[in-house]
Length: 329
Image (cartoon, rainbow, N blue to C red; front, side, top):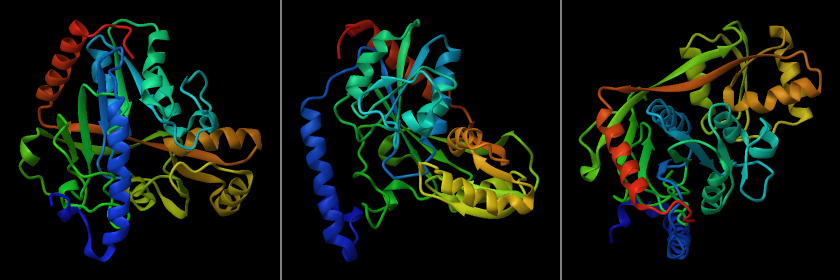
């Protein structure tokens, strides 16, 4: 059986149940799948959490913008409060989710669980040569992707196992167009492309966007908080203490009080990610908190020539633009 290498014998039942549910969901949703009204680029992953798909999505969108396209981001908006697809019109992370607000600082962004419904809303956004760029979406089968990019980190997906013992959200497949791999991760050893799919490498850089590198508490509500701490330290941030929360954490007043107490000895100085900052800033202002944030963000830079990747994306966009009716969805 082709799936057996991705199942751990010690967790065969739980992983098999997860895999069965995933395959049923794929079969049902794929039967009703449709194209979007515009070319659709998907940046996703086979593995859960922390593969760099959000900075990779921004990188793709910025490359397309430089070429004269109008990128429109489609994203689920995890931990947001909206129930239907909607165009982000304010930088309210508690309404739309943290990652949609990060994207909306740069590009028109549509948040919603139903990506096909979100794609239809793109008709209401003005701009020439519109292109949809999905942040996550390989596991959203109701919307057909025209070009799919898989992001991976140090543990290559073909060496991983199905959830819950591993990190695989689905069995890796070849119905994708490119792989983006981080090369500055511990233990990563670039090898030849997987099953002939073009593989491109990039480095991740953590940058201080605002504030200082002075001693302070690190607050992380991301998929991999230990990596967050390491990256801030590596970039020169002086870490005194750390407070970890779950990914996409919705910060509360009690959380803020905890952070204030921990940061008091550092003159209320707190290091955090841009993803956390879009929520913490609102709360700090609302509560008139003395906390001072130093905000760190992740950027990616290609290693080597990625023109082949960009050429392939543009070629697909041009092909779709010529042959697809604009009002389909």
